[in-house]
Image (cartoon, rainbow, N blue to C red; front, top):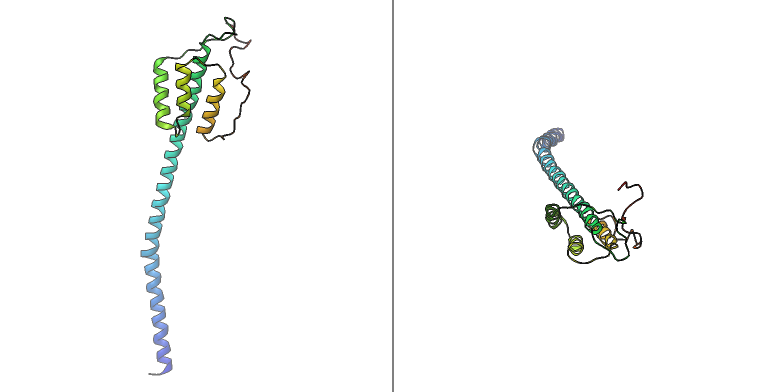
Length: 164
């Protein structure tokens, strides 16, 4: 066999190997990788969507807890407050039960629900709302730095614009 024939056979073998490799890569390996990648991408998007929905549920539960706390605090009698200085809010037992269930099923920590229980069952000062707001901030990952530290003006009892 001559060198020319050896080079021709080698060239054809390399070309054929390249074609086979290209076909295998293009039609077998690459589609499998693409399917795996798309499946992974889909699962990641699904998990992200679930996380977003869970966070929204937690946010709604926490803000509902703040509203319930405001309503409850506004109905207490305080020694230094005159009758009519605080406009009472309204809240039902069913709303509180639902809020407890939502908090228990969505929060990572018990701080928010513990403070709400304290507001419901103990004699508290209106400035406890500061603690609840800060607990909500931490739970919702808005930062763990206390945002509102003004305990003297922490609770809005009534504003002059109220007609009642």
